[in-house]
Image 1 (cartoon, one colour):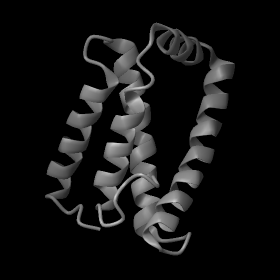
Image 2 (cartoon, one colour):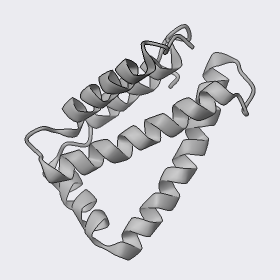
Image 3 (cartoon, helix red, strand yellow):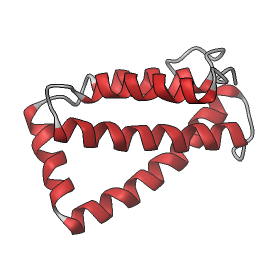
Length: 122
């Protein structure tokens, strides 16, 4: 998050950060690991717990970066959306690697903005 501009809207910030991150995780090894986790119930449960921790870390990172309190509702909602998008993108990546998680993520955020009517100016 620290690399993102402070005046960037929260939703743009998390979308761009996720897009940057996805570029580093497109290797066959990453795909194999993600598939193993997805297909193993015990590992999948641990992955869900990890997402919860990452969501809380993201809330704090967003709030700190924007100079907002840790319990800021906009940061909490944005983090929840970002982690949801991350999970959906990984599912899309595992089901159709040709599409890639980045392309799915771009389409998912565009869909969210359409649903919200462009109300991402936080």
